[in-house]
Image 1 (cartoon, rainbow, N blue to C red):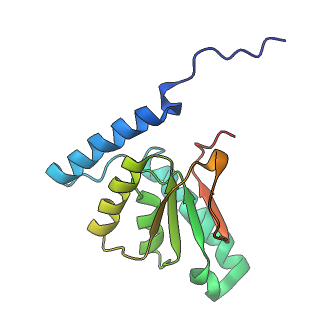
Image 2: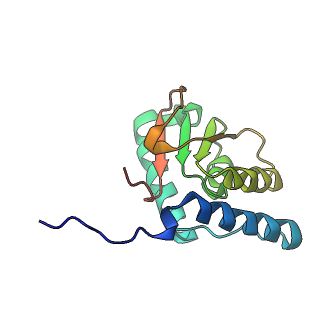
Image 3: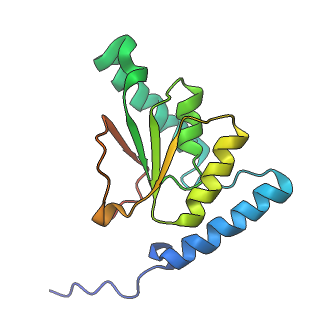
Amino acid sequence: MDTDEGEASELGTLEHWESVYATELANLQSTGDEGEVWFGIETMQTMLSWTLSLLEARHGSGVHALRLLDIGTGNGAMLVALYKKGFHNITGTDYSRASLVLAAAVLAKNGCTCALLKEDDMTNSKLLAAYDVLLDKGAAVL
């Protein structure tokens, strides 16, 4: 059986994402544009709504005390959405430093000072903290 999948996509390279996020940071600084929500705003809102429904059913009024981790945070859009829903114990990780610089700027623009940002490659994670909820928008390939 042939398992060769051919050339890897540039979307799987750190160099690609460093370039993308550096460009998005420059755009944010010059125009105020926070960058693209990679899987679309509607998809993010659907994921957020579904996640909140499940968490509220299980944790009731204690839902906002949960520790949430957004894996592959990109520009931090999911963290901003969680913050606006009342979550304050939120962390975003990405293996791209440029992503984290952009996310910090987007979070600051939205008044979110409670989110932590950490450089981490989820395929070889060095995170030591425990989280109650792990969020991934489908980019994970292990």
